[in-house]
Structure formats: structure tokens, C-alpha cells
Amino acid sequence: MDPLIYEFRTAYAGMKGEQLAETLRPDLQSSSTKLVYIWGNGSVHDVTNDLNFLFYSDPASPRMSQEEATGWCEIYLSYWRAVGEILAAQGLLDAMKPSKPSSWTKVYEAWKELTLQIIRGYTHYDFENWTIPCLYVAGKYLRIFAIRADEERKSIGGDAADTDMQDDFDPESEEHKMLEDCTRHLNRIFQTCLNDRAPLEESRKWGIYYVINLLFKSYFRLNSAALSKNVLRAIQAGRGDMPPFDRFPKSQQVTFKYYEGVLAFLEENYVDAEQHLTTAWHMCHKDAKHNLELILTYLIPCHLLTTHTLPSSKLLEPFPRLQQLFLPLAQAMKKADLRAFDIALRDGEDELIKRRIYLTLERGRDIALRNLLRKVFISGGLEEGKDGTPPVRRTRIPVVEFAAAMKMSSGEDIDTDEVECLLANMIYKNLMKGYIAHERGIVVLSKNGAFPGTNV
Image 1 (cartoon, rainbow, N blue to C red):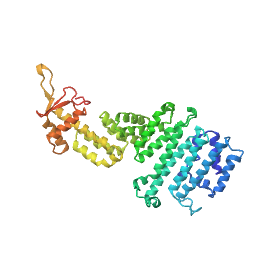
Image 2: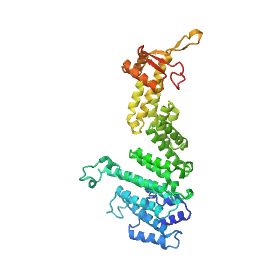
Image 3: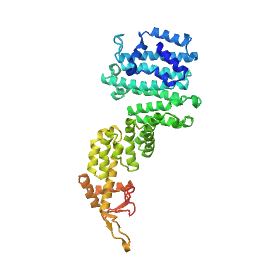
């Protein structure tokens, strides 16, 4: 533990929060040897003695109150225990301690204890706000270990001891048991930051958006996105006491705006969703292709519904998966090909449902139908003007002409009543201006702007 504490002392003396948080980062890919060295011989007695000396007796210890020293001592003891569980789960302790069982559930429980100790540092031991990155590391890996524990439970069929003699056992609720528990502790971190009453320059509120983004990710993984609204309401209620949003790291701003946009999208508030997602799109780093793809996944359907704008091939070129999803639909809408649209929607159904955009894109059929009706209107030609006035487009169109076009485009038979119903819907949705003269079997279209937004 000595090298670890010396790293702690250097970071603490320089008040470098990121460097301090690195001492708690359990990154096995780059520092497995370091973690094995920290674990040592696995003696809790020896580690406790070392920590007591390094924090209380060593003259080189950093200047801090007795209470704060107690807080950090408890944190690093919990971290040491978590390291042992992590190494065991990775099979790196077999040679040293082959009898130690390995389980990601135990890793999660050990890391949860570390997280609680860090939270306690802020609520009981007056940790300063520059140490907030420690909360970031605690929350980030708590979520990672919760997911791994749930995956482990799923792969081995869960813990039988938990399910015996339980008539109300719900397998779906057990599937994400640890992640659900994780969200409760992430909420504690959120409240720890939100309820800080210190002046802004010394406030824990500077850590709030990082934690919010972790909560959003967790809620979406649990398919409980609606719970995110509670977080947004809490933020709105305390907005006056918050630091300005643009003062937070840009990465946190982009992630927050993305989830805020997706939440508005899921509530069918497409105007607000488009605003938030557009902000995220413009702020996102140009090389963050995965993040840009996620933003476009929802921004494209928003544009489709709010402005009837179709994505261009150039926009989708860097994103092959989005090309596969959106280009067939966009081409079908542009060509007014109802059958091609239905086929493209059916072929992408599984992926579109997974991404929560199926029902929204289904409305794109209205755009394809609008374009088809517009073609019928234009193909009707011009009528001679009265009293020497210039020719004007024919505005009285028989319903049978629209019916013939729909039948040709969709490849399906369609009766007159259904055609009139579709036309009435188009008029109601303001995609077409006019009225249906049912008894005469014609549609009377507006002479000016019969199809709003299309210059016709």
C-alpha cells in the first residue's frame, strides 16, 4: 500500500482531483501488476497497520484534520478489499490464495462499500470539492461491476438460494438486480452533490452532471427511462443554485443534452427533442463517431416530423449502420413509393424497435403518401384561366385518381372509403389543404399551397 499512499500524498498536496482519483481506479488492463502489488499478501491486519501509520503516525503525512484522515483511511481499506475481490474474479489470485472464491457479485458488493465510504467522506468528514473526481471513479465502476455481476448471474442461472420458496419470484426483476441496486447508490451521490449548500466555488454541485449522466445510462439500460424525469425535475427545481451549464466540461454537456433530447423524443415532444439533440450534435467532437451516430439516430426522425427533411447520403456516409436503416426509407419517401417504404420499415423493424424509433419512423409513411398525392396533383396539368387570367393548376381531382395512384404505389387493392379516410387524415395533419366533396367523388384542393412546405 505504501506506493499508493505516496501517490495519494502527492495528489493531495497539489490539490489535483484527477490525479487523486487515479489512485482509486481499478484498471486491470493497464495496471494489473499494480493491483496485485497493492493486495500484497492479503493480510487485513498488515494493511490496517500500514494505513494507520501512513495516515496518523508518519511525519510525512499531509496536513488534514483527524476526521478527514479517518475518512481517507477507511476509503483505502475498502479499496484494498475491493482490489482483492477484483483480482479473485479475474483469476489472478489463484497462485497466492487458491481457496478465495471469485464472483463479480462480490466485487460489486466490495466496490459498493468503497462508494459508501467515499460518500461518507463528503457527508461526515468534510472532503473538499476538488476531490470530486473520486466520486466519478466510484460511480463509474459501481455501474460497470453491477452490469458484470448481472451478466454473471444470468450466465449461471442466478442464485438458487435467492429464488427457493418464493411464489412471487420475477425472473425479469432479477435480471438487472445489481444495476437496480446501483442506481439507488448513484442517486445518493446525486443527492450528495445537489444538496450541498457551500458557495459555488467550493460546492460539490460541480460533480452533478457526471453523476446525472451515469443515472441516465443506467435507467435506459434498465428500460426505465421515465425515472430520468425525476432527475430532470430535481435539476429544474434547483436551477437557481446551480453553476452555469456552459461551465461544465463539454463532454458532460453533450451527454446530458443527448439524453435530455431522447427523453423529449420518447414523450413525442419532437420540437424540444430536436433542439436538445441539435445542441449535442454541434458540441460533440467530430472524431466521436459513435456518439455522433447515437445523436443522429434520434435527430433524423425529429427532422423528419418537424421539418419533413430527409437525410442526405453525404450526412449518412460516415455511419454505415444508419445508412442501412434510413436510406431505404428516405429513398422510398422521396420517390413516393409506398410499397418500398413498407418493405424498408419491415426489414429494419427489429433494429428500429431496439433503438426506440420504429413508431416515429412509421409516421414517415404520411410523407411518402403526401408526395404521392402531390404527384397526382401536379400530373393533373393546368386549367385555362377565366377572363384571360393565366392558367392555374387543376384543383378538383376525382378520388378515383388518388385511389389508382395508391394502388399502383402500394401494390394492394384499396377501396374508395379507405382512400377518402386517408385523404381526410392528410388534410387533418395539414399535409394537404382542401376538402372532400363526398357526394361528387372529388377532392377540392387549395389554389395556394395545396401541399404546405413543398412550394406547390
